[in-house]
Image (cartoon, rainbow, N blue to C red; front, side, top):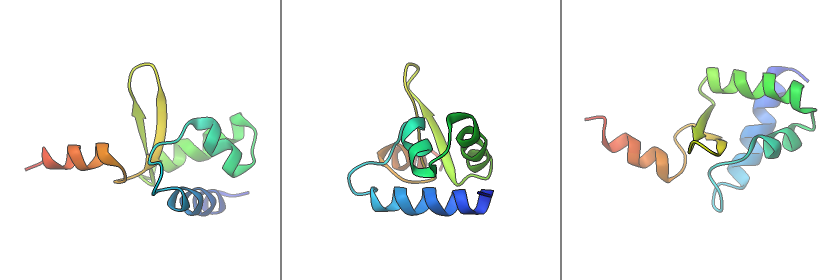
Length: 81
């Protein structure tokens, strides 16, 4: 699998689930990619760097979501005026 295939799989899967959920655990993304955690981490980190995904952390929990999706993104967008 190359990076473009990984992006396509993740974006397609997350858009399907977007109505019920906007943030996903790393393990959820690794399952979508059907890769072991170490290989999945490389793809996911590159997607964060390329701004396809965004990283979100509450301090105790780390999650990922599509860039600009979910309640958190709308709240942050209001502050940039």
